[in-house]
Image 1 (cartoon, helix red, strand yellow):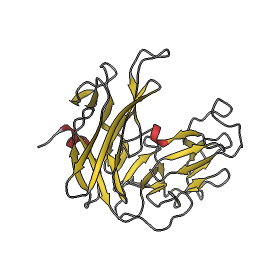
Image 2: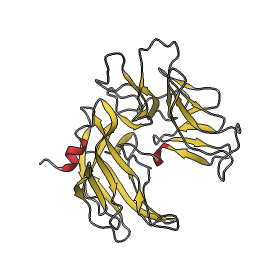
Image 3: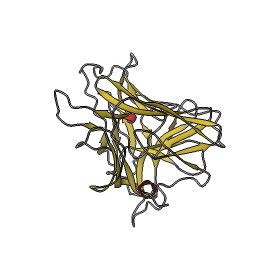
Image 4: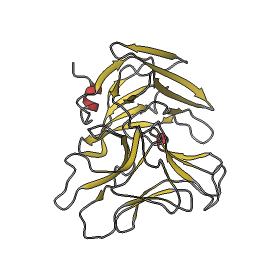
Length: 298
């Protein structure tokens, strides 16, 4: 049966050996979980960026356990008459088919094949931010850590950007405080350990807000597509999928707290989906039992 979720995910370019699984939950009726049963590499390069040592196109950072890579990539069929489009992203490491779970510069692709002798690079700045530079040295994407504010260090105090084993790129101060993380800016993928957040009205806003997943435009184009998954600001804690501005699916209205688990036959794994409330922020998160499994909601 052709469902809105199927339509939303049709732009995903998935490995042929992925297993597609549907599950039910009180907050989100149907999601798709992709479990990749593939062996992990036994060794990996450095998992972090430090001041003065940028990441250039052609190089990667790999998480400590070898699960994820951070680097520059060109999607399938991502070409122009002059050059291929280049993006900074995070993908599953060590599998045959590129499967990207996060993209930094979705709307501002870089290009390769120019006459410049320089290459694009990602660098940690002396203000504890990450900045993505094109071959001409122009900043096309950057984080927004404000040095000197509460919880953030003064310039040049030794912040480090690390790719975690969960696939999250995190900027940390020397005392370990997280200053910025890619999990707080999802693109089209919801990973284990990530909190998909819903913020209730407060002193600074009368609106409900929250994270959103936005589909790729096509398998070869990571720019924002037509389908969006997230909280409807006009309703009380109800998840929607939109095609543009038109709703094509909605969950039941959330009225309380739940923690559910789902056994999936034939794969010896359980998907745990939980919803919690902390400091006025409601969040949804999931995990998968067992070792050596890669999963995401798309």
